[in-house]
Length: 268
Ligand code: WA2
Image: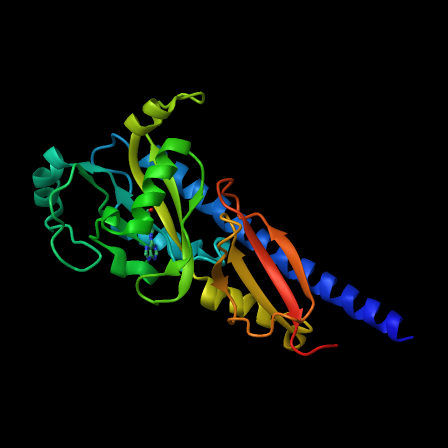
């Protein structure tokens, strides 16, 4: 009798965890796909058209109207690749000076990634050289060599200070061949499109709508380095004795591993 109710409790934990993991992975996937589509939109409409076919207001309007397609993202922004020798010309054409994330004028470097378009929800990214942030810079470099969606380590996002991860796609000149080498990819890179997965508030909101939410504790980790899991979502765990179910998560960056760990709030 006792044995059977234990099995049922375990089964319920497994099914609640798997349901949540599938749902989160699904919402991640649709969000990544839509950001990918905007990257192609920019490559199509903003390359070598003079005047450019997308301006900051058009980008803000389009991204606001399509935000329902990106349910877990705090917003989307486009950073243009600017080389050092182009900086003076760029800044005088834009009529502003690029800043670092610390709100200081960007110090000289080989190249920059100033945000020229942003959704209103992340308007604080405007004019920031995204290469001035460690996590964003790593993403930019990995996005352009791979041509794939890339994610950062968990960190606290600008603006909200919520725990999350940043998604980046490189935007290439449309003449990039499908079988391009790494060198060709880097050379053909014209900018970067991305945004922050606000895991702390948007995943909370997602999970809070599910039945049985009061009964379990959910954590999400980046386990790319299996011996050093990095917390991405959920309360810190004190009681390690409670039975646990682990569901795999695939957020679409093959370089990273994520998992969801679920347990009952109290022993069943
Ligand atoms: N987006 C939102 N919040 C952030 C953030 C970010 N990056 N970085 C820190 N907090 C413009 O990789 C290009 C968006 C990065 C794209």
